[in-house]
Length: 131
Image (tube, rainbow, N blue to C red; front, side):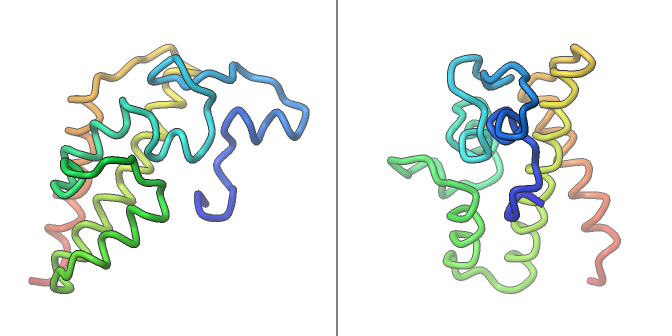
């Protein structure tokens, strides 16, 4: 959904005449857009760096297309590549859930909690893969 404009961020909803708070729920400083949430937001980028070690050494934050491209460019074997693709997908899902929890339920998860939710989901899925 993210790659096809399916996630309804504040800027997408505004185009449709639905007005919600336009500031990022995580950093509270920038406008909420898909590119900001994934991965321009410093809060979310810190989460990404905990999963993707090569992001520790980059000068500019990548967008979501670049993250997926970068996974393919790392030269991983298929097992590791699929593992990182799963992490990236889980991260997108759990960041979106955390955003909705903030907006609709007033629940604010720390970075550590979001990271642990991603790790748990990835572990459960990876354990089901054939070895």
